[in-house]
Length: 303
Ligand code: ADP
Ligand code: MG
Image 1 (cartoon, rainbow, N blue to C red):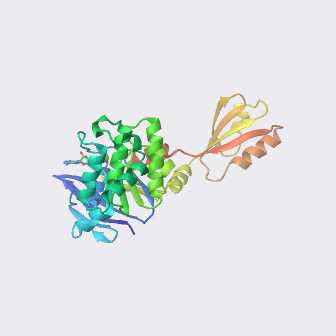
Image 2 (image 1 turned 135 degrees about the vertical axis):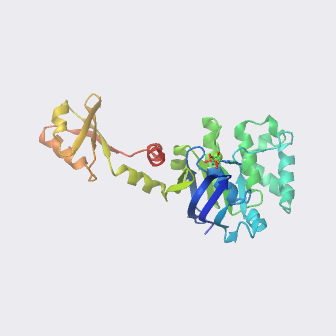
Image 3 (image 1 turned 180 degrees about the vertical axis):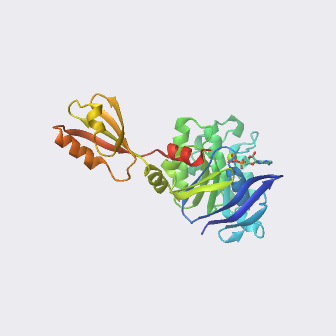
């Protein structure tokens, strides 16, 4: 087990930013930590990385207690904070050298060169951090997070503020690094979770609202309603389609193309095929529409 969080509370004055949160993350997993703004994501991550103390509860990283063995925990954890606070006046190499010294890394020079290559900073390595684009600053942030070869990586919104190309690059990099490490990453971008995470933990107002495999959450949320997009070879009518058993919503989206919805749990595609057959129609295409992660997230976190 890489991360164990048990009944954690965190109060800022009167306000409970975390309210009885528990979850576990296995080694090797890439877990998406989701929630609307102010849900408590950054707070949880700061507790796991020993940046702030919890009010109560228990947190262990690689079996080590964050309060009692915080020095050991810090060695096992790499952290990319939300507003990645880099020293803008420092040169890339100088900064990484500084970080490597803090961790007392042997063979600093080689390790820094290795990191620069891994995160793709070769061309920028002689520049000042302040001269780099946001995407390249994030690469520097990732390099400092993994320079001491931690088992666990905590990434707080690693792709926020990146343009689409940078976003794809950084995601690839995280996937790559994630092959050998446990990764917990917070985000509010659902496609990101779909693209890189095995599992999703969702919090809202300091409380856990979901913890499951990304696919399972989607499946569960799609249960109550299914929508099928079907294309027939010929014209048919709305009233005819409405007669199909179990269909409660019919929408024509293009010529001979219909969106049919039901709140039945059973797959309605066979019924639609049968309808086509009985009415002399051919089904050209038929697809069951999965609810997007985005919709699932909205549903789980709405008021
Ligand atoms: P998220 O990262 O999910 O957006 P945060 O963990 O940053 O959420 O914040 C959770 C809640 O705690 C918010 O209501 C926020 O205003 C509050 N909060 C965060 N940091 C502090 C702080 N240092 N002092 C007081 N309140 C804070
Ligand atoms: Mg945050």
